[in-house]
Length: 303
Length: 273
Image 1 (cartoon, helix red, strand yellow):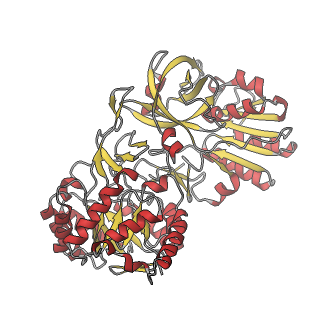
Image 2 (image 1 turned 135 degrees about the vertical axis):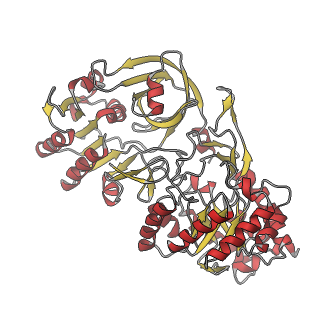
Image 3 (image 1 turned 180 degrees about the vertical axis):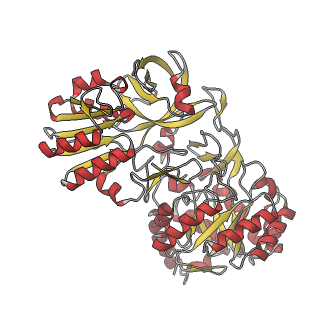
């Protein structure tokens, strides 16, 4: 009842972690994989990267602000983590990559695919790393170019993770589709900042960061709704942003997402919470008279 | 959920007192005292830690080594941030968030315990000895490189039965703390064993205790970023040192390949000990 086909991936349920939440260590990725329909890796680049000095996170009642600065062990080293993961877990992996150009993205995706991942997610939306993410992905022409060059390089499905830091989210979704992307992830974090009033300085070392958690749920739902409308339901969407309960997940599905990613909620609970979400979702599907969860996708557009 | 973000609120503190722990030692270790900045009623378990932010430098996890109206942290000048902290004096300010993580299990009354502290790791065990208020039931093995590096000796001499070991034999038992600890386990029937210090030392202590069927807990040191269990910097097996630790049960530790073998760099690369 919760099984869902997402592009070429067969998922046992529509939940997965969001990139950057766990997914550096094979052992924690396995823990997510025990419960989730798929797992998403930390975003990997060509070289090992330390990221910014701390503070890299700020927590407050509305959510979480982070500017880690894309720390990652590099695409080669990460292959060794994946090798260990696959020895213990069969849950499909979506490998996230970030590059500074269409060419770099394609090379990284090829390398990631050679590690055995079932799909690629393109990080076109990190809001706090110079020369990467949003700096590239806020322009629809770049989204098309990167998607196209990666599609030529790999056989596995390619999902573009898009930024909400734009005036026309639908245009970004259309741009990804035009480039041949098999799906999109909506959304990455929203660019934001906090200042420490006692020390009178920005908390984050990089000053600006990305906001996640409760505060951005309505933004995510709106972006998914816009993307679904702009692509007339023809482009599969992974919804993400502020999901803290199965009801929040249903909201994303109704807006047009076929599956959802969990981020900040995993700071408060272990991946085991996915079991609870599955129970809630199953009960809802049954009680509302649907046969399976797929029938909910985009249902709010028909109302 | 509510209390979770409050724990991660950064609170400015001013240093009231600094103690040089190793005036004649080979390494710089200092203890910094400051007023407890947390809301009234905040309980601090022995073994919990703070994320200490030195503005413009870094924010690192440091164990709380003393509680009361004033808190204290003991810092070994090892990296950028700890070195910057050690250059500070009374009146200087930094910020902290916490108390974070899971601490040590306080033993039953009358239970005989062995504590094994290696170097600065000693500081996270000191509050457990304070909480127990039973010096005669605690054997404390304090390991250091040399006599001048022994920290917190006067405090621990009051709260425990203190046994010093030095690598160079300049004071007490000559050799590693883990060797002295194993000798103690051979002669005394302990209810529990606790360890905090260099990880290869803790691996030996945990194995020695498990071999004898003893309950054992060890406190791990890892670089941390979020300190809320999502960034994976401090992943140990399926767990995270920041929220599931830093204190772990020895049986879990022994089953994870990371314990005593590797930690992760800031980039997430495995670094062997």
